[in-house]
Image (cartoon, rainbow, N blue to C red; front, side, top):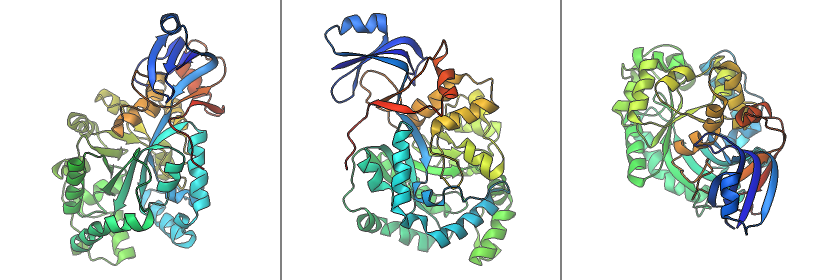
Length: 410
């Protein structure tokens, strides 16, 4: 058992504490937490460490694409999603980043440096799974499938267990869940979307869906035209009548397919409207935002204030290094703080911790609470009266682990 006496503590699921203490067992499980004057006398015999600065639970990056790490800084943004993805496909075809294990390993090492304990990794190649397990990260692996033609796509889905066995072998960590998951409503056949999210519910795991990310998505789903159709026709040579479109808005269509649900992460929602966000909240769908990626691609931010008005506490992700400058979710929170000054700093830091943990369905992560084992790190310095504001000011300050969830395997 071990007691930490800190200048301040971010709890994740509660207000920050000044002059706080947290007691851990030898596995890093939280035994007690609260004001130091209350906690320390209850554990008078425990070894005590004084920590100068703010202690935080391990961060949660709830949306990553680590296999694209070899494309760091190569994404050409600002012209909208379809031009960006067209450029990305070209760069990916030329550079094959998923065949660059050094770039993936370096990205996973950076997660650890930033104090990130868990991820929602979205992948086509599964190349980052072993690296995440070696670093002891927890979370969810979302194995994406694409395809607008139903029968070939269903055949690919049936082949996924063999693909996992060939590329990963025995699953390397019980702390990482696995789910086959749809990419978007306009790149994955609707019947397959419904089947995948239903299967995830049966298996008791999270799925993920890029949803209402940009205006071209809405245009295609509602009207069957626009940049998405032009892109399909030019790149895949598909006829217009080969593309099924529902004539529905993204959130309504997701709901009809069973994809607006408490076990399916709704990622981005940059183009969502207030009434749609209210519907997301009613369905209890976990929300993940990637604001710096949205700024890079579309020069647009997610509608954070209407989300808050609807009662949504989002998690944060970084998307890939092809669209975001780093994998640091505190930098995402800082980007939101700079642009939404009315939002309390504590709420923004909570999005990088407990918001992401909730989205991934992991109550043991992202918060300093009895029974949780989130990992703890410190940002050193004088926090002053507002620890959360200090954290957001200090995104460039090095972070030091006090207690990892588990040892890193070499």
